[in-house]
Image (cartoon, rainbow, N blue to C red; front, side, top):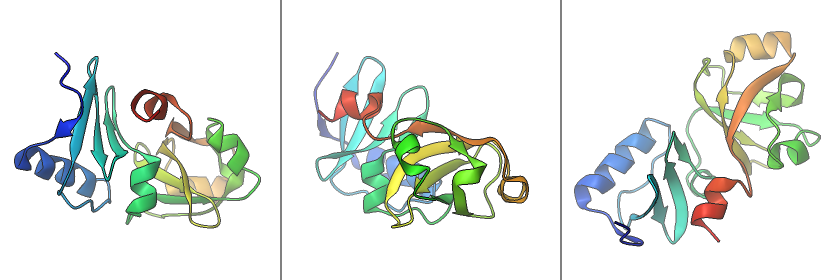
Length: 155
């Protein structure tokens, strides 16, 4: 049964807050709404989609641009930006800076040189290996502008 978008209970809001804290994002648990569609759900804050929960749990670009993550940040050069925002995975050659604590499998937040977040992905290798070798694909994208998450829940 679909109820449409509605506010979540305090307990569920705290659960969302705790999930995001585990990702390095401190979202206040006030005024969180949820929209559910065919086994997927999206949590909203300030009318914007903030957290997608489906096959995986992914913070959206709206969320990370509003509440900058405290860890897992990766900065890319200007040449990489157009490819990433069109859905291409991230290659080591385009990375200028990254959180040295990133490990293989960690969620990472990709930003341009102006500190605007442009994508969310998963690290394919540890940060130390990425910065040392500077070769090959190193981040698999999970979310980028205009992807299915935004099309489904924000149109």
